Image 1: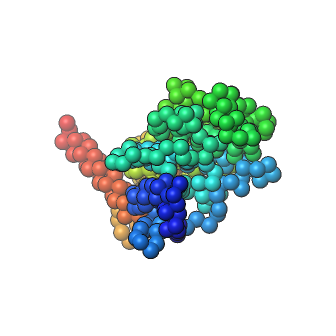
Image 2 (image 1 turned 30 degrees about the vertical axis):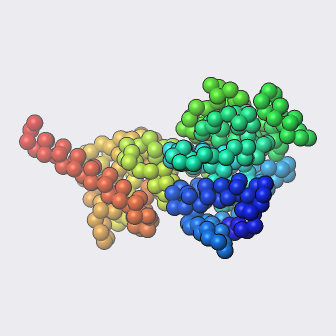
Length: 395
């Protein structure tokens, strides 16, 4: 609970500002529902007390990972920043610009999971009141913000670039003894790349930070999705410069899972939050050409989606179907309640990337997520019935 003393609102110099920040954050209660945004459950404001009830995250903030000796591995930094970009893209779609992105406002939930918090300084485009200016943390402000120019989501993109720099290098891109010197550097000096202070940082990541922190808007990432895509590309090995630097990361990074699921037609109508939920409950693995994924007669307690490759469905060596990237198989394990026995063999026709969803985990998923699966499966069944009718009619 964030408890605000009533005396702060009565402060002759800053009282109006404190009240504005409180009202802005309180107005977002129940609206920013995303797995990487700290939920605001309730807000109360009366004569006796003012407080906001928020989701509890016990891992502290990212500040502790911004000092030499406590830096996170490079791959984890990229994963964390990726999740931040997806959360801020979600906020942007709701016409919300945070305006105070910094490590102290990003809560650490373990491994690479984070929750962005403190939306008190947010600029809400749909609001009907004037937004206060001259708020935020100078070291993370964009050139447009320190000049008090009109702002949009690109100011948060810049600030996220500074956060990424700080997490990678263990220092801020600009060092200054006062705000005047700091503002001069932000608006007119090109910082050293993070690799100048941590040589193992690959060129691809230096380029991402530079792109996010570009002083001129026309050189900065125009959209959050561009920022996210470049971060995901590092994990996918699309950057040869980064490929040799990746050691010890999981076989499938969370960023790779999210980006892969989002490209599959099956998940076209899933929200970001629902895609993250699928990424968490699913198992990911590679199978080689000729390897059996499902066997006739065995108990079925999962279904799979083809993230990449081809599978064939056979019964007693007779070919029934060929399934390609984006298609699902074994869904009767979920649709047919109770014990389900496989009715055919499913074998890889090429090296494949497979997403497997256990039926028991899907049954425990959110109502919204299960509803989207039901809808997607219904569309598949209708399409298959239509194709069967066409074949039977000889058309």
